[in-house]
Image (cartoon, rainbow, N blue to C red):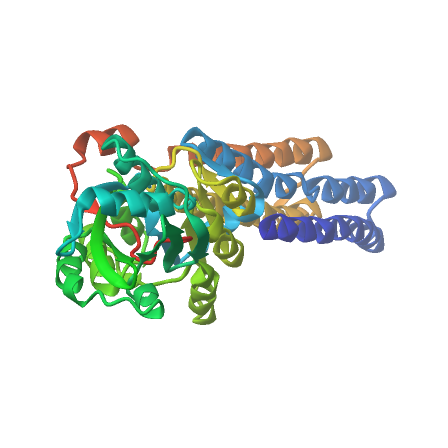
Length: 431
């Protein structure tokens, strides 16, 4: 970690100062007429007092306490570098689905075009979606299953990442996805757009369905916001951190969710493969960016960010790529991670300052600079005790990190208010 490397370099130079200072002290005292015994006494005291043991403990003790404090709250820092990176973050990018929301979408509305049977629509759509691994697809399939609707096997299934899916079911060409996919497939959904916009404006995901070149219906889904999401955003704001929400939803729907949670900036209609590029754009503006995500598609963005944060309930790929993992899958742990990082870095700086300052003050005393005028002499055994005391102070100061103020999860859950369902990304397959 950078802090440890700095301490190691300082310790290296302090050892040189100890050796050179000891020899110099010995020669100077001999030069002014002192006995060999007296000169050697001062030289040994200089070497003892400048022993960099406190400097060597300055960062490891703080890092140990910081990682332990994080682990108590389910925040697992993979290494010391992640801990220090958390202290420098000024922008947090949150993927909406599965991070701010629970990642458990449910079908709320099924709108059919004139002349279309609802059960038949669900039969065709669920047949297509059974081949998809996206959470929205799973929700539609589950909904059709609850209604006892059989799912025939599709043929020619094609996933269009970030847009939807296409397949043939019982001779019918079925397209499920967003407006862009409908336009690409030449499907007229004009009569459904008004209802779709109403559903989207209410915070739901509105998925369009086309059958044999005609708009056949709209299926709306909703995903509940996590109870602690709003408080997490407030805590991040208290830290002076800008919060950015990434969403595959259209701009209006994404902004509605952002207003609900108090989020500063929304980047909407983001394709799955573009998340890392959006993080890179923020970094190009000079920001230190943390990315919070849970899916396979979030892995490149987690790797791109200065600090990758994975939700514990997310995919193995995301967890492996991230620098730290939120084991409780709670967005409130994001500001906790930043607070622990900042507190740890503050203790590291305090410890380094104390260790260096102590040596700066103690070195001239050990060398006998004040002996002629004040009669002040520091014997080697006293110097050794003093150096040990300095190390104890460093360790105790690091332990004080445990008093860091962190949000209480129990109070958060008790005081949480029921929230309106949040939308899943309208650009949904692979997003």
